[in-house]
Length: 191
Image 1 (cartoon, one colour):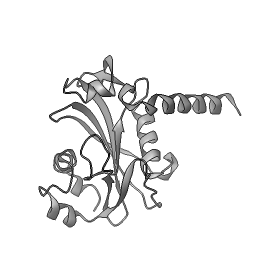
Image 2 (cartoon, rainbow, N blue to C red; image 1 turned 90 degrees about the vertical axis):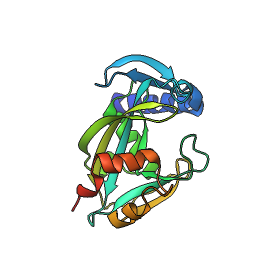
Image 3 (cartoon, rainbow, N blue to C red; image 1 turned 30 degrees about the vertical axis):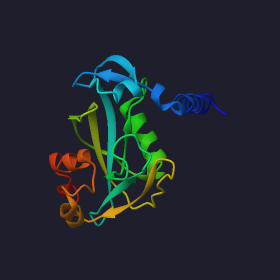
């Protein structure tokens, strides 16, 4: 095993051990430009403190222009049992945006980085009743098979743009997905 593989394996092992106690997971606190100003635990991030912390989202389209959505597991802390972005998650303290994107995509839908090409779309601040997030939004076109993780999601499927529009505002999707779909004009990405 070369030193690069060892470091990557060691880093993944440490991250796994930290994530086992999700409330103790460490997130960076950032300003609206993404500059790190402090750190906090997952528990603090979701406790109503509204300290801004970064997350990544990847919207995956197939070549037909359909958008893959994950079905959030019923045990999820935030927005259980709703349809949401293909992959999304917090950026851990000490992790880059790209590292978080690659980790989340692999954990949630089983895609290795060489299987897709992310296109940066934008970043924005999302605020809910319990948190504030700086969201880095990416899109990709991918026809490779997706493998939704049973420990991360309750599955997923591709939706047509019309299906998404027909279900907006009906409690089918997370409020964040609905806002992002409109704000980022996700129905105009792939034609």
